[in-house]
Length: 391
Image (cartoon, rainbow, N blue to C red; front, side, top):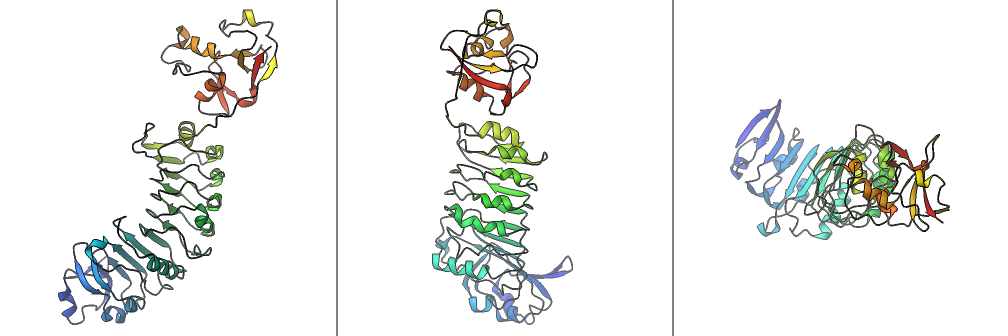
């Protein structure tokens, strides 16, 4: 048994149940801690309920029987309960202390395969919804797939929310999150069935960190994600290209995307700027390009790139130049540039050989708003590009 002061606050570490036999074992105690290797028969005790100083409880170990009737009477500011595998035949924490007092609540299941009673989890969520003074809420690995009602996310002081490792599938279940006006961190990682997020999340103007690691079925990011002016860190982990809205390029210049993938042909790990993430992981729809019919230009034969293939029926990209004739580029241009002196290993067009049409060439740059002029290697705006078919 330890009963000592930490930062001026008395902490009681329960290493065995012998402590409960001592007189006044709760005198002056602000924090009760059960280590992960310890098992107690019942928790909490009446002495804890009677304590005028107890404010924090950390249950990292195992409890054979939770006294829900007593737990509800505790007036805690912080409660942490770790749920261990059900094979231990140990009780789970489904009740919380007096909700009007709680500022920090963390209930986490260590084993995703542990059996959790659906009815009890639903009852727990209803109790949590009453804790209007919460500043930090963690409900990880509890097999949550839905919330009690549309008004669950009403915590006016909440700044941190973690729902990692749950079974959230329907994005509409998360619609109410936009009510958390002061939210700074949101963690939805390892909700493996979640394919998209509600666009209402982009109303969280104070959100600084959004974590989506291990959401392998993710198909898209919110359309208006670029409106989240406070977002500095976006953590993602998916195994395929997804729909990434162009608005992501509007994120703060200091924003970073922490990307990770497992078992993917496109494996990437580390931090990257939004532009790089957008270019590399954006799913480009296979939409046919509309071509403008055009006669073969008069200057075709004297064009400085002589292998454009100015032939009837061929398609080309026409790049406008301010005071000069347009530059034309066909698939043949691309392939020849990659195999000439201009196409050395550092040339912008030294790429793979699977280009079949000019649309493929355009998409290789990974950004539908800019392109590289093959003559000048300078960036070209989309508004200065046309696609033509020679007639």
